[in-house]
Amino acid sequence: MNEILLASWKVLAIRGAVSLLFGVLAAFWPGLTLMWLIVMFAAYALVSGAVSITAAVRNRKSIDDWWLLLLLGLVGLAGGAGALLYPGLTALMLVLVIGATALASGIADIAMAIRLRKIIRGEAFLILNGVVSIAFGVFVFFFPGAGALALVWLISIYAIVSGVLLLALAWRARDWAGGHGTPPESLPAHG
Image 1 (cartoon, one colour):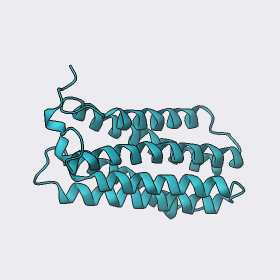
Image 2 (image 1 turned 90 degrees about the horizontal axis):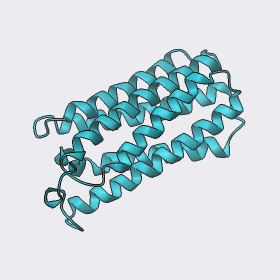
Image 3 (image 1 turned 45 degrees about the horizontal axis):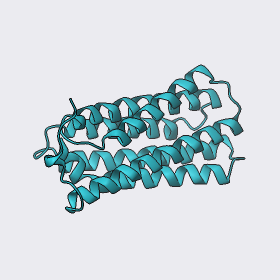
């Protein structure tokens, strides 16, 4: 599993950068209409999903857990495609689509982190990102009637936090892949 982290630090960095960019754009334009919110979410989900699927396909023969990235990518593509195919979604339906995507992504991130936990230290960023995603998804399901402006701010904060956490993990994985610091194989497994 450490190979998937080391081989895909760029994927983590791209996911983090896309999430961060999406969050910042949503924060600077809080008065977005529902249509723009749908387009921004769809673009974020489609790009993130495509990046994850590409990494999964590239690593399918060399990494046993490639299917986790594939699953994450398919969830992103499904969320993005659903938002584009039905642009007339009400704010409530969009909130539920975003919440479901966050829940599924969080579960997939935690599953990957649990697998990494047996091999290396430093998986906490991925676990924390999964927890943030799940917490966001649960919050959205409990409070679906939030106003559009509150939704934009909530999505912005979630995307920024998620982006920062993924970029931090990518930074550590890049250092490991480049031989800077302790290689993952030499670290004791958590027990």
